Length: 503
Image (cartoon, rainbow, N blue to C red; front, side, top):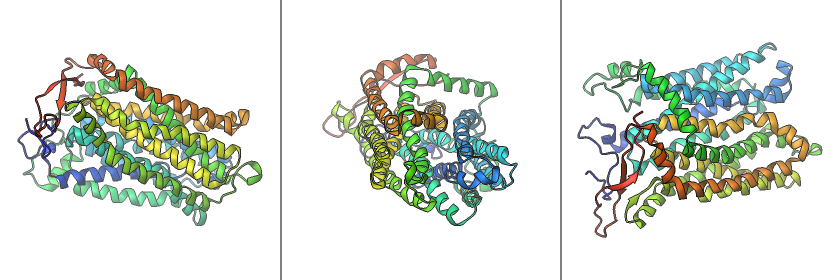
């Protein structure tokens, strides 16, 4: 069996074909991953760029800022629906083909939104943001599938982190850039500048990105390869429309399996409450001081959100040094045996930060503490929420190795559905019991969600064994990694359940 320089058995085993994505050079793999990461960032900053524009748009459409802010909920709805649709399309037309045309869609909707400046354009503006969300949800889902095709299993945790962090970074960068823009420019500039960024991304895709499942021979001309790839004719075994229907069905089968529901509910709670704080902090900062707010201007709000950038840096460092190293270290302590549940131990630290941050956030608003305390609370919450998503995804990737895109799509629903509904219930809830009780309750629920991690660590293998109905056969393979036998040699492959999905 083939091994890497450290003696770790390579899973999956690469072929002898130099064009096999698993055999690509490190430079080629890194360029591919970088473009996908940039696409994740660009899609999210384009989708969420109007987080601070509602106050300026309200007079234009003769609506309240809360009504204009519904565009964020519609964008989130698009981010849920889009991934579910793109999974079968990616299997039929290719990952890179779908990435290119989804980026074109994001660019087109940015222009559409920027042109909606008339008083009767409110409905069309909301529609443009929904469509933008549909297109913007594609890169992360398709990129996760690319990681499985290009990288070995013991590298996937770090690679998934590299994809998810720019994706989430786009969410916090959008209000920062938007706040600075609307303080001196028209709100439409928020959309025009993202159009330029997506234009750059399109050029990068066309010039440097090749599909990791392409059947186009390397000896063909570059122009011919690009033409076939981006017209959806380069996939080695394109899925039939019947297969596409089955893929959509598999998304819900994963979501309603015991393993999917536990992991999904964990993401729903922790990421959902984190999203709630992110959405609501702008409103509390903008409210006048005599109404319990902080009286910040749009520029001051943009500057405030730099605390989240600190959180991004900490989350990225944590993921880089922990996401693969800790599971491999635990594997070596268990005689070199690999189990997917080892990845779950990466969740304890970040998942513990979410209830602390959410509780402190509520206390800051209830007692009107200094804005620096609110910034600390936001940072802690964001560190936790940004870290739990890639680590949970890495675990589920090991559980559903052949259904990664489907798994990512349904987990996106769990992750975003709570944020989608936040704007509709948070205001009356806070009015009824006060912001202290709202976020205090959220903190206790987040703390209780840690129990889900314990359940998966203890009984995850049992739940994985119940996933056998996804496959015609469910082979059990347990991986021995380097260092298990004292002389650096990997031992033979033994038995550990890992679902191999060929529905």
